[in-house]
Image 1 (cartoon, rainbow, N blue to C red):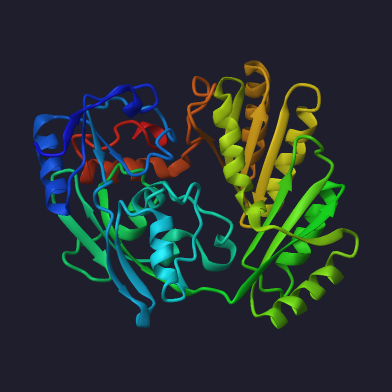
Image 2 (cartoon, rainbow, N blue to C red; image 1 turned 30 degrees about the vertical axis):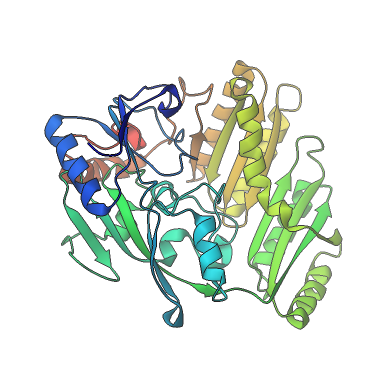
Length: 408
């Protein structure tokens, strides 16, 4: 088969070694590969840029890696309608560069945009700081095409070719980690590029002050595009509240003045936009020494996220170190460093606190906590429904077997 090669150790997935890697040149070839894989009983691991391939549980089996690297075209940019149709293997950076030529953007940010693909970002439902204003990637998605495990090409939403009755494919495929089908193309609504952007940081010396400022900002009339709290391990009592304003110079100046009035108890100054790469920096730090660190993602109400981190700061004072960045939407990334027993203790404490508040905790990467934690945490009462959908669309467990919630 064309574009087929033997897998190398670099193609392993969470320590599981596949046999082959195939990179179809178009949607039809990809559909043929999946149909053949199902007929042959092969386990298929879809792969985009590979930036988040270590997320989730290790696969039960891994025979074939299915790469979307060759499906990297921007098929249609209707700039007058603020829409774009793009193949799943296109990187976010390449897409943004093309859209910028018409003064537009996909108002979404992800980890490693120069390597992360559109299909991978949708499959992992990764959300950056722009979510507070523009929504998650699935909120910008208006149409999707994916290939089901039997080779059926199905579309839903904008630019419909074939609908699958009874299923909202865009929302179903987003965040499913490629367990239901392989995304081949997507249609997004776009936003204009801002005339200018300014990042302002407020420095406080107490978590309570940061929480008070966050509440004031969320309750204010300020129109910010991003809002986060950085908690460095070097000095956990010095916190940084970052705010991104976009628009005209006059409008941004007025917004900053209003912010300074709200944050009268904090030090306020303008900083470089690199602070929005903090989440990516935590991931990079984790990859330096994954044997003595753990990377957690929590999702809850903003106030509960800060409370969990306050608890984490207390229990790691003499046992381990913790760094974190909290988005205003209640998503937080936490990097723990220390001995395995210390990481396990801290992870269990924060997991219990988050889940008791109705939130969730995900262990990212091939972590030292894998033996004691399900990577996705508790699925709650949604698991039977998720298993039923998996059984309906992928009855032979062809795609990413075991990698998703509850071993799906």
